Structure formats: structure tokens, C-alpha cells
Length: 225
Image (cartoon, rainbow, N blue to C red; front, top):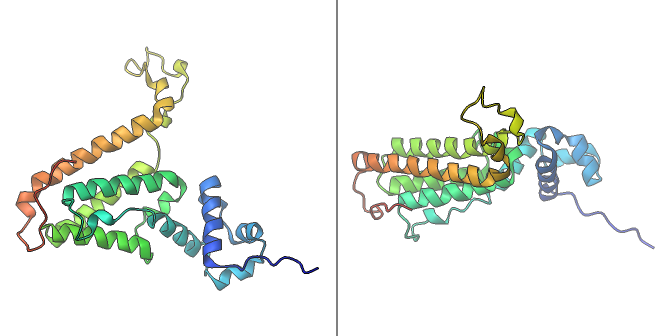
């Protein structure tokens, strides 16, 4: 009786296995030897698809970028630039929150990653199309990436232990409820992100009249999301 054939090794299988390792154990868990063992292949066979570990991690990062919604930047979408940035930021952060260990790779920028470059192209194109000068559109893209990836690097709320005795009122008179933050981590962190995002967009809206120039593709005046 013929033995069942193993699935053919492919870039997708390697990226899927590497993504699972990163999600479960972090970036340091990924090595060509470990991946080969997980996939049931010899180590050198991975080099038919990737030159090194860094290329594999780039592919894992790009697989996360694919999950980010860019529909709000399409020309046919009715959302103005402010609403588009708001909704994109929520989608981007949700993708990063689902895969926090890969955030340091994404924070370095898109490099040559196709999906990451599509994100950058969509944001820049939409901002220029809305009337922002190219230089300021570049700054907006950078600002949003700093804010979103920074928020995904760690949890503010879960940085406090849930032990009330750790916050002696004699030493920390204003942290009497800090031990409750960890159990409300998602609520606190998502609320903080939304607060910061609205403040950021409010600031950009104040600059819009100063920087924006009329174009044929300018979208409607921004409404607060």
C-alpha cells in the first residue's frame, strides 16, 4: 500500500508555520531548523523559497498587512479623508493586536513587502487626493504608523499588577485603583487608542485649511467620525 504523500513545501506553508510560531512564542522562536522540524522537511529545503530567517519574518509581517482594510481609500468610497484615516487606523490596530509579536518587524516600515507598500501607497494617495500637499501627506502617513504600531507594542493597562498591596497609598496616593486595570485591559487600551486617535485627527483637521489645496479629486469637507 502506497504511503500517503506529504503536502508539497511552499512559501504559503512556510509562512503559515512561521506565523503560528511567532504568535505562540515570539520572534525568537523562529529559526530555519525549528521551521523545518515543524514542517517535516530538511532545513536546506526552506532555502528554495527564502534566503534567510529575515525574509521569512518579512513574509509573516506582510501576511498581517494583507488583513488591513483599505477599502476606505478607494476613489469610489464616500468617506472623507478624516473618516478614512479613522476607520483604517482601527482596522490596522485590530490586525496588529491579533499578532502582537510581529509588530517590531512591521514597525521598521514596509521595506520591499508588497502588502505593506500597498498600505503606504493607499494612505499617501488618498491624502494627496484629498488636497494635502505631498510632503504633509508623507508626514501624516508616518504619524499614523508611529501612533498605531506604538499602541500595539504593549498594553498600558496590563502593565499594572492585579495585587492591591503593590500600591501602598503612602507611596502612590493616586494609584488606589491601579490593581483593577489589568482585568479591564481591553476596555482601557481600546478607549485610550480611540481617545488618542480622535485627538490626532482633530489636530490634523485644524491644519487642513492651512495645508490643503483645491484639486479636482478633493473629497467632501471632513466630518468627525
